[in-house]
Length: 572
Ligand code: ATP
Ligand code: MG
Image (cartoon, rainbow, N blue to C red; front, side, top):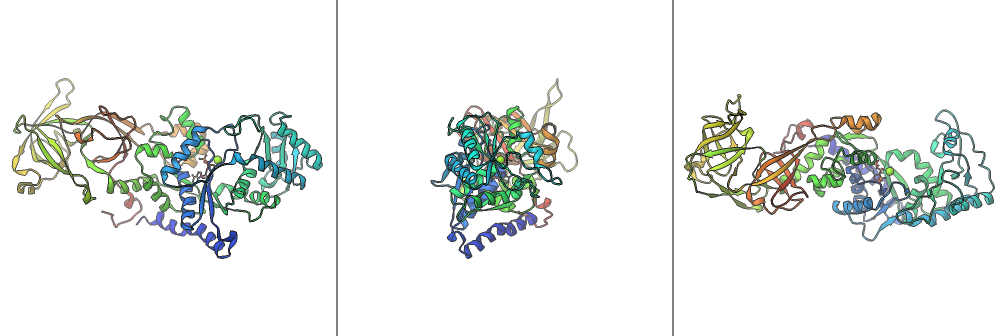
């Protein structure tokens, strides 16, 4: 089953696990395994981060190790407390525990500064007065070697004094930087005297105005890992070319037992955007309702949509970890939540587009309480009563006055079963005089066919869900389709932000305001999930009120995953 997705996972978990196994065997790091999840608090977490969270915390669990949660908050211009709070909430919600190891890179600014002094004193770093454009120009390209900066050979004393001046705020933003002194002709551009510190007179959400120089990612990240005694620093493939710099920094501050960087392929998913920057474009320009819009792949969006942590963890486990980039089909994520909710979501009846149905021969005042199974997949879930009466509502699409071939639902002269109730026969219908639309359908019922009685054995081709007009509750139901029309993010990255907007699916959200649900749903709370029979899985939205229920469709019932994977053995 799930052939390609699953086999990938077994091989690839092994590739990082294999490194850990080998290290344990050689008693590297004294047998310790210590990982971290290091988000930059500049946006909300998405399903790609979930992959990284599951991988890091998962490896720690499997190896009796530890995993830290660390905010990589070295860039004060884009970071906000709101993001920190959402990230903490999301990692916890996913089911992982960092215990007392919640760290902030900004807490290490003093120590990082001291290590920069060590580099300067060792002749490994210098203050450079070239501006950003000049630095780029001097750096060269893949084919042209770089040129050395005219400031490269400043004395240690001069460098120390200028670097201190930078820290004291004596120079303007951009006037000077601290650079590593490595090799301007290195084939790896990252090694051509990369910038370690820049001047930025910007308030930081934790350190306030204490600092006006901030470390660059490539300098800060290895140090953060080292200070926390991380052993395996797992990151995504685009940092592969940065690994020599990661190692250089640690070597040149004479790190003892330096951590090692290991890269894996980031998660890309079809029909959606994953980069925080691009998500922000959608949120800030109102293309979606917020970071928790149920169409977004953010964890807050998925949660509001009705995804469970279990389904997301299961998805992350099954897609596996590889060394080459690929795009995962979004329908596999949908398959995972369907599997989960199939087992645990209570089944109820809800009519999304109601059509009135009157049972002409049913007593006017009679209300019968029909026994309904809560979930045939879960024998412990029991049954409930649902009221049945003379006037009901069925789905508009479940009646056809002039049915096409193979239409087994209701039509003039035909019989269907009403789920958990009776067999009915259509004896007529009424059109709206003005619009011509069908306004109501008339039926008769056969009292001998009540569900649970011997007469119920009689077979008819169609079974419809329904609600009683006397007791059904009004509801709004929001249906979703994919956010982007097709393909993966890579294509839209190239097309720029306009390309992204052009790819938005105009039908990604449809709101049905006249829905009716069975009365037992009166006191549902946001986050509760149900299967609406024949209609899919639905989750109560935070906008829901007792007098106006609001549901999001998590996913439809139809699961083509096995077919998509070319698997003939169906999972029934
Ligand atoms: P984005 O590109 O969405 O802005 P990022 O890499 O800048 O993401 P960080 O906050 O720096 O976001 O990421 C925290 C951790 O999550 C990093 O270790 C990063 O490698 C990992 N990560 C981010 N996106 C993905 C992804 N799509 N798949 C797997 N891991 C990811
Ligand atoms: Mg980043």
